[in-house]
Length: 285
Ligand SMILES: Cc1cc2nc3c(=O)[nH]c(=O)nc-3n(C[C@H](O)[C@H](O)[C@H](O)COP(=O)(O)OP(=O)(O)OC[C@H]3O[C@@H](n4cnc5c(N)ncnc54)[C@H](O)[C@@H]3O)c2cc1C
Ligand code: FES
Image 1: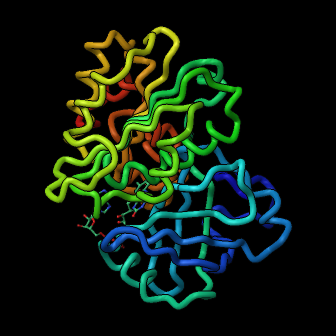
Image 2 (image 1 turned 60 degrees about the horizontal axis):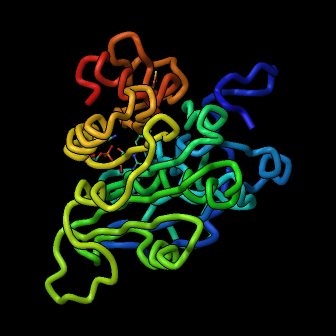
């Protein structure tokens, strides 16, 4: 699989590989989890990626868009993408029947620095669609449990009906080898089985040693501000706060310049940045 640095004469970095939609699993309103199976068996077998990377997903005749990989590389066979219906390409994707063919280029982007993170605690902090890339990291860590010390998930949604992957994540509440903290801002019916309140309140529920912990954060823009403030108060160093930051992208491979911020291409230098990088780049957060 071309990862954007193809060298052979036959490789074209803009040439998508065909993939079939084998499942479309409804999530919350306007969000679906698409399971894609690459058509070519050799490409399928060689498709490897790291949590935090994305693909360029295309619909023939409509266009393409960057979408984070939601599945874990520990589970091969299908690529899972959690997509929010928002514009031209995603509208067209939601209209496609099962078994339709779509195009996939990638994987692109840097992904999480797993080699550095191994042997440390892992604190995953997600809000809304931010769970899409972080779900890949979560399952990677749970499938390779011995590679990490403590694993803690903090995930917040406005209400239970808006929590992505709700049923999958609720099954993690009983696990003894991780802490799963799921919060909703409001629970008017009083039926939510976990926490109630904004995601930053979850910081009061546990202690971790910031010197041996990496925090992985992804969520709506406002969340970065409050979560990074909390992490800094907890004495996390700026290079142990890893943030998945989206920017408008086109080529995905560092050629078109659409995603440039300062001297960085967010498609190849990101989308995972340390807090240190983020505050030193104009308008990054
Ligand atoms: C690295 C990366 C990973 C992404 N991962 C996912 C994912 O896992 N799931 C998912 O649903 N989407 C994801 N996105 C966002 C997705 O690429 C955009 O929503 C894309 O524009 C959808 O294409 P469209 O043609 O349907 O919408 P468009 O017609 O392009 O846009 C519709 C609206 O969305 C706005 N928009 C476009 N791009 C972004 C963006 N990056 N952030 C915020 N608003 C935007 C536009 O300004 C417009 O208002 C990701 C983006 C990046 C850069
Ligand atoms: S999207 Fe083209 S350079 Fe990054």
